[in-house]
Image (cartoon, rainbow, N blue to C red; front, side, top):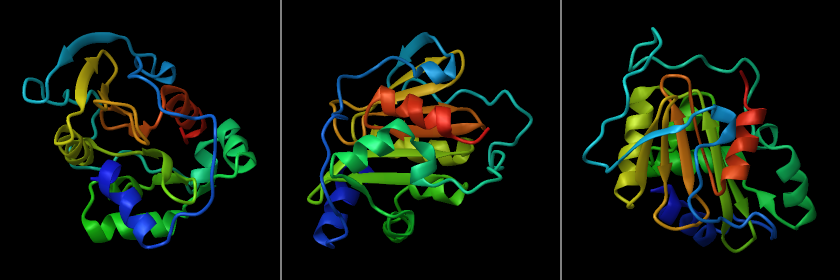
Length: 200
């Protein structure tokens, strides 16, 4: 799974590059403000399935693909400046995509849908991870299942689903709006920024 393996694999392969300060992951946060969702229930992984989509898109059909290419740089604005001035770098999308696909990691589904998974590197380890993509229910189900194996908790809201890591780390929060989009980040603030900059 991405939170434990991808950073270690990239580090071992010498693919991580330089360092940052200022975006440390914090405690679990409420629903991203960009979603307009409010909490309506909390559920354990085995107690609650992903909500049924409200749109006419089928569960296995892709959500609307973005018209412009999604890049790690296009998903962040303020944080990109913070990353570069703080000495951090973003591992290029092609490297991350190849690694995720080769390992069979479900986070590769963000790339398959026309999105991106972005690893912010200190040069020695992953400082933060963020992702966005117009994923569908089938892709979300694979990502969700993988996160549950790492102890993530789920909160179903009136607008979507939030998953929260058991403890802060380079990847701490994910949010999915059924058959529209999904995103993940190290902090709620970064996730809000990703949603604000994402297409659509």
